[in-house]
Length: 359
Image 1: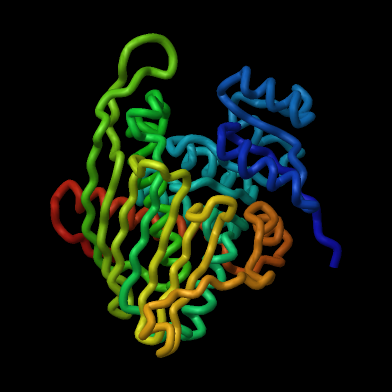
Image 2: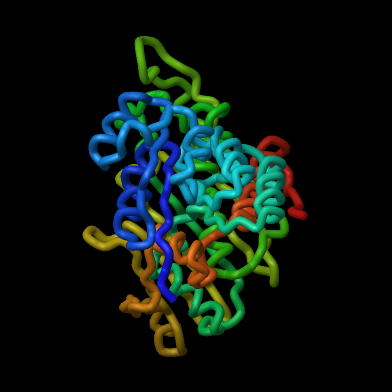
């Protein structure tokens, strides 16, 4: 059956759209960018000229883009505070959507959005982008096939460095609670939560968290003066998962020398897996395995070549979902909903200093 080409309207033209969404839309033969929206008129004009979008399909109000008859699906790449309202507008218009993470500012909003999407029966995708890393998919398959036996422990690190004082990052929206909800937790930590859940195929049952802020004021983006940072620079949390799995996480924007570094170590009864991202110069994702008595006794981990079937593309995966040809591995709004409940529980725990049970 011939696949349909879907006309995409993108809301939010920031870094994630320019670096991931737009290139992915362009690569896919089943997606066509036809409309764009941003509240920054200069950014809107520049993007329109660069990508050949005429003025009639450049919008400053997302309602106009969603209502545009040429738009089949809505691509949501705004700051976190606008995710819910733009997605709900797409749902009300009966249009499929993909959405950046975290999907909403609170678990309550996530529940509303997930229910509305389900009631309309709309196709959707949450952009937990590390589900598309070949090493992560390979690790998931190895775990599911029982290659490392019963999983006991998982340790997940996600380190970036752009929060350090030496970088002199100004008070961008990711440092403002009213626009982002949380700091490193919502920016990086929710990715880590989803990736561990994806690879292991297990849910979180109890969690305890700790957050902190190192730089409390930053220069305003426009004009002179300083503004208050009211979100976390780092967060550490531990979790119980189904089947007695113990998980620990370290998340920070103060990881000196790191770019977009991730490391997940999974330890089982018959083997261990290490997934890493941005660890070796020139390489993206990698996987190492320790399996069998010889490797175990010698404490040796072997780097594996990744078979071709594990490679995928985020925006092509969205096109596949729209054409009912997906592989079932991208995150849906239900996954985003579950993730937001865990994020809220971590914030609650960090405030109370106590473990929080997940319903």
